[in-house]
Image (cartoon, rainbow, N blue to C red; front, side, top):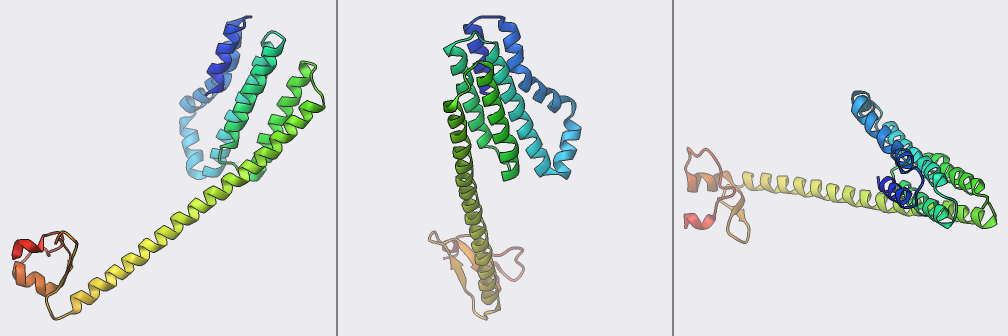
Length: 229
């Protein structure tokens, strides 16, 4: 979504059949929208039955189409420094976007990294610039991609464990609160627990009967104890 309009602007600015270039750049977005409009029912059923497979397929498909379109569109630009800069900038941006997707390690290496390497080498071969520096650059892309993915996975796993610990603590507090309420309800005296504003958080039935009457329809929870002074 970011690379498509940027490529279109670059192609219009640097001449040569801007309509053809624009259409070539819009192919991934157009196919994505067509699939979403005309195959929405099938996609929804797939998401409901196989959410991981559906999510992986949509992400990989969109990335692949966009990456190939970037390469083809850049090759249609006039030869020179601008052509190379447009491809490097847009392909790197799209690859960085791909690294942010939620993919397992197999899909990340087998599709994301493999496709980026093939497109990168194919473009530089087409423009007669395939050399050791290009091979080194794409190798560094792969190493950085795997490293960033591991960092992202570690951060996401840590955040998940923190949420899990928080949920366990919340459930533990709910159990303690229920036990506290059970103890209060079994007492023979009239007692309650209030917050700093004097609102009743929990009370025994004896206090409810004392302040609200035996024919009460609700308890004291939420009411201010000062109102009964």
